[in-house]
Image (cartoon, rainbow, N blue to C red; front, side, top):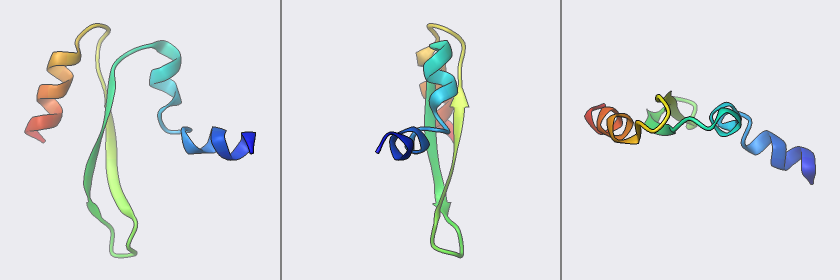
Length: 57
């Protein structure tokens, strides 16, 4: 189903379109049982700093 496929990556598509590095960081589980997390986007060709930041969090 193309719509289902589109909706599965709706939160990461911005980084994919512009080509900048991004990482999703898990941040626990909400009281309703759903996972909580956030995405960090970095500068072009700066994956090392992005990974270091995610590691510190």
